[in-house]
Structures are given as structure tokens and as C-alpha cells.
Length: 326
Image (cartoon, rainbow, N blue to C red; front, side, top):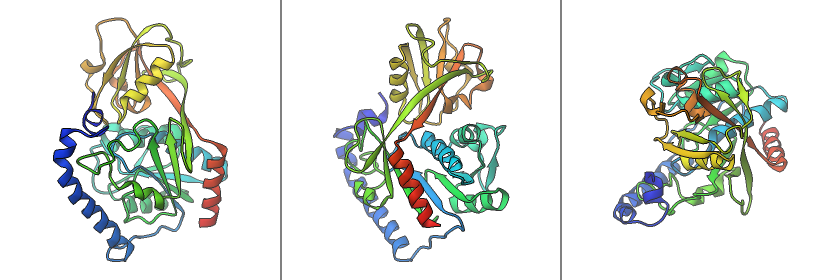
């Protein structure tokens, strides 16, 4: 059981002890937002529409598959999208850097590299997303920018905000950091443009997103593809270094696999001994983990590819809002 499930999923002794610090954090969050709202701090705009995809909780909610889906949707609608990201988990710092399919995840981060490869669009990483956006526009043919995370990065003005909610975890114990998982109060949802719920039955004005398994590919040779349920009935090692590994493990079980789970922290930098096991059972990883592990694997290591499926009303609502922002 990870930290989130142990201490933040419900009220706990730890959350009670940390409650005074969460009140202080709430004040800081409120003051920072107000500083941008009244102009004490400046938000800079870019000459193209900016769509921010983020969340108000710590931990994985499915932002990266959603970003990839949005890029494909926008391209199909005639736009030329590009993506900016902080590049969390990578060693690169300082000036903005353009990510290519041949970049190393250890340098640019696992999520930006996965987006660059899967969405096949320009991606720029930089801790300052405003500078990332400027670099993207200066070097690539882009007429709309999707920000991977950055809901709290108010320095960059945005036209559309999309908040992703984990349908299983929701908001945990409802407390702000460090007593709970919230980066901002739940009331922050009142200010976003669209709310997407990953899994579960959506309520109110949330749009349902489903992460649909599409196929598995061999990590050493991605051209080798098999159906996602090819290991049904077989014992499999499941490896996940993501924000919510149990969601991935549940997906593998739903595909009929007899799972031996191996959970690691989000953005974990693997070494070979962590993913090599002393049996002949296949090893199945997330796409996000696989981009870091190509040099550590053998032919028995596979990655499960998933696709974010969104309802047509969400797609239309996004395109309508985007057209109004032009």
C-alpha cells in the first residue's frame, strides 16, 4: 500500500497531525491565486490558444493519455497542436528543450517522451511553461498549445482549463497538502472549463474518460504487437512506476492475467534487477515506464498500450470553446 492509500484516502492519525500545516498551505495557495487575480503578479499570454490539462490532487489521474488524445483530436479538427511540459523526472534544467522521439527519458522526462512518440507532435520541456510555450512557437509550426499539467502554473495565461479527476480516489480525505492529496481546494473546479473523470460513474457536469487497452508491444522491438489479452490465464509480472499503479494492475487483471504486482514510485528510474525475475513469466509494463527501460529489457518484456476514449459531447465542447477563443 502506497502513501496515498495509507494516509490520504481517508482520515488518519497522520492527516490529523498534519492538519495545521495544511491550513498554512491553504493560506499560501489562496494568497498566490489572489496575487495573480488582482495583478500583483503578471500572467503572460501567448499569441495562440493555450489548453491546460491538470488536476487538483497529487498522484496520477490520467493526464498524459488525455493530452495524447487531445492532440489527436485537435489535429483531426485541422489544428496544428504542440505540447509543453515541465519534464518532471528528467535531468534537464534551464533553457527550454525540444523533445524528439530519440530523446532520453532520463533527460527530458518520461511523460514528454511518451507524448512525443505517441502523439507525434512537437513537445518542449521547461520548468517555466511560459518559456516553453515561447520556444515551441519560435521553432515549430503550431497554432494551439496543450500544457501537460500546469493547472497551478498561473504565470502562463490560458484559454481553456481541463481538470482530470480520478474516478476511484476522487479527492481522498478532502484535505490540502500535506494532510491530504489536494493541491488546491475542491472549489477550484468551479473555475475550470471542463472536468474529465477517469473511471467510475461521472456526476454533475463531468465527462467520462475510459482508458481502453489497445494492444501490447515488445519493448525491445515495438513493431512486434499482440492483442492486449494475449496473456489471459497466464502468470504475469506487472510493473508500474506511476501515480496510481493499482489502476494499471486492475487493467491487467481485467484482461485475464494472473498478476504478480510490482509497484514503484511515480517517475521511478529503474535498474535492471528491478524488472528481471527468476522465472519465465512475461513482464508487462506501462508505456510511461517502458520509455525508460528499453536498454534494461529482454524479449519477455512487454508494454500495454492504452487509448483515452472520450465522449463526443466533450470533444464538441472543447472545439466550441477553442473556436470562441480565437
